[in-house]
Length: 299
Ligand SMILES: O=C(O)CCC(=O)C(=O)O
Ligand SMILES: [Fe+2]
Image 1 (cartoon, rainbow, N blue to C red):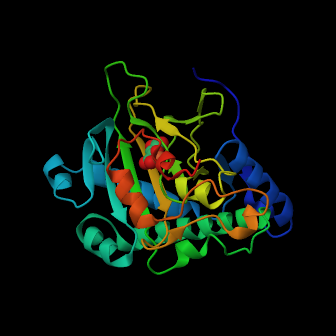
Image 2 (cartoon, rainbow, N blue to C red; image 1 turned 30 degrees about the vertical axis):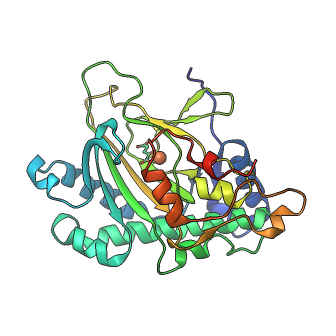
């Protein structure tokens, strides 16, 4: 069932004056929903629109040309047989692979500009979260500023589909990394799962970012933050294509993922420690919709 309520929206324009209040609201949103929207986030609108233009240009290319691009996929999501009504391009964000990928497809300047702006915003938000939890500001964000950060940038393109379908754009899942920043054009599609098992459609706003708590952040907060399950319904609503641009902030592969001891004063750890590399292998071996964290639960 789908419901009509508004997800939390965080206005970052007062970031410098009202940090304590913002941190509190963000922590509440991550505990209650694993999700919030962020407005007045400081990512320049020109950077967002330029990336959107480049993405549409890419997806308009002939199929054979797209197929030759490393990271391109059509209808097959991942390697475990999941399918969706979309095509996508998945890029590693370290600079070398960006150069390799972009030399013929994208303006290097536009992609790097976007990814770096998204990474900065993710770090600002992780700083506010850490402070809201009573941790040192950089507790989480150093994992994304590390030169070996394993972050990804994904462009999802949902062409309009004519046959009736309600859910199969991108099936239900949680994101495995730490934090996801997603923005889309004005065509709707994204829905998040609420704790009472209802689906909440997220009104698209090309100026805002949707912030999604990933599995690793759930572990690093010992389950206090919730990695929210979400999906994109197939694009049946219009003759216009839907585009989402998604930055996934992940740590260096050998990072051990565990909750900081300061957050464990009253509670036992819920998960056994694992490395991001281990978790990724586990993820790839499972279906999109599987609840992968259960495997690492201690109780
Ligand atoms: O396109 C969307 O709105 C959702 C995409 C998504 O969840 C993902 O790429 O992980
Ligand atoms: Fe996702």
